[in-house]
Amino acid sequence: MPAPVSAPSIEAFHAALSAQDRAIADELRSAIQNALPEAEGKIWHRHPVWFLEGNPIVGYSRLKDALRLMFWSGQSFTTEGLSPSGSFKAAEIRYRAASEIDAQALAKWLAEARVVQWDYKNIVKRKGQLRRLP
Image (cartoon, rainbow, N blue to C red; front, side):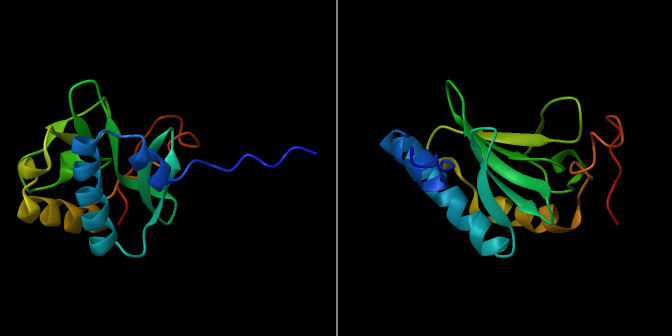
């Protein structure tokens, strides 16, 4: 009987990155875990994503020219510095070096991510309609 295939881990994602990208990812993961200790972090659609009560909140992915940090509800944040991403409420920032990370802005975005949420968990059930969570 073959061994069960385990889901890839965030550690495996980081291990596959270049040293420069791994430095960015390590700093982001540390900030996310410190700010949202109750969030569940896992690989989702091949990228590290953190969830609160099953709702995706924040994650990052490797693009051709940068590491992208995305907040699913980021377009509704009041803290500046994120760019709209996609057709829903997501917003992102891209990093090419760990030195580009503004720790104060990141802390503010993570604090907002806890309280400003759109219900992505139920988007399919609601046929593509997003609702703001209370």
